[in-house]
Length: 125
Image (cartoon, rainbow, N blue to C red; front, top):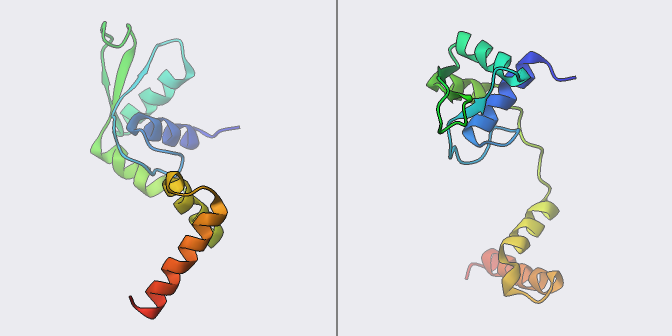
């Protein structure tokens, strides 16, 4: 069961377009909800705490209330989001491959290339 603090954090993160670790690009700042939802009560609590501001319903929001995150809310997310899990060396290598996968026929080809790059860095050229 999610606590009220977890729910508040989740709504703030979602409002800003962040993941559950508070990471990502803050590409938005709004959360729309109606009176009949559980989220509305949580948003009202966030407004009372000074972490969000409430805007009245409009045609743009489909008749729902729109809540905006305040600078204090942004700080709350930064301070209360859990740290992301550790990424192993192998996971980092595979993520690097995924970002460059169109350059290689297989993961094995990437591993050979990556090993050559590391050797060049170690030797210094």
